[in-house]
Image (cartoon, one colour):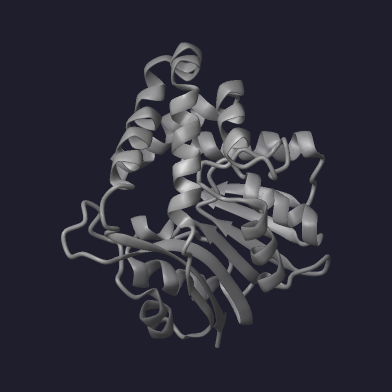
Length: 254
């Protein structure tokens, strides 16, 4: 966990104010708001779906779990009028998210540095929870149990993650069936979908990283290496049979 925290901390610190990374994201996903530069491969349609399924508004609150730089959660916050608490274990991400909220003038958003499986936030307090491309790095039942603790009865979780199609993935925590995981934590599944175009979205981001390779390395130096390596490996994997599938899952806390 400490190694992962340091890795994400370093990456978020490197890209938080990177103009080149902003160009990378918006070359790949031109429909995103100019201020929104997520670390994951997401587009406007996905954020709209999350906002709709969470069904939160001005008199409700929601969590963005593993919020990273904070942009997706802030977008949903502004879109719905609900109050936001962003949670991430990387301090650099939390600092960047707080600064982004300040720049956006979004007073109803706050961010806390905490582990997603043990947030220390008050129980049965939140009406919804979103998480984008994160829980595959955690023990599935632990994080689902924490989400159940945080949500009010009837609260909705909406998330994207990867499910394993093979037994020997390098990340051992990737589950094969997140519906079963969330059912075991006391949720009823409202929606489950394998996202058929996830490779297309990821490849668009990887290709954009490759396009700006030299500029990114010039701007942030050796901190660009993990991004460049991920893009290179991701484009190479695109020619192989998939070993994971990306899913969209929504569930109700019973």
